[in-house]
Length: 84
Image (tube, rainbow, N blue to C red; front, side, top):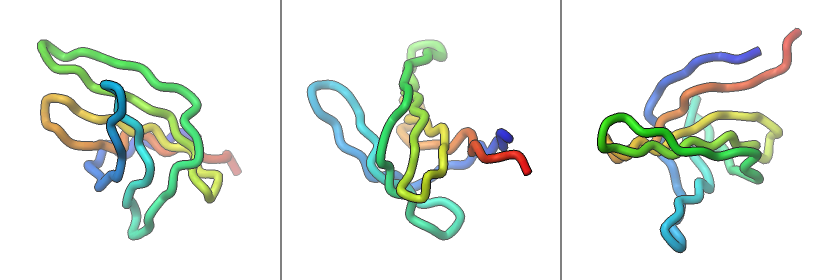
């Protein structure tokens, strides 16, 4: 199941060698610690780049988050879950 979220989130990340790395974010009243990034890519809207990441958390949840270069903010785009 894929749930579109499209909400800004508070993210702790770091920048190294010109790249951004997400570490943890706050969503749904919880802090989600990222254990791995399974894929990442860039997209462009006009002159602005966005950096997308599919991440897995310590609770084994999977999310797609994005650093929006135009707005200079993090956005949770999708939450992936099991189908019941």
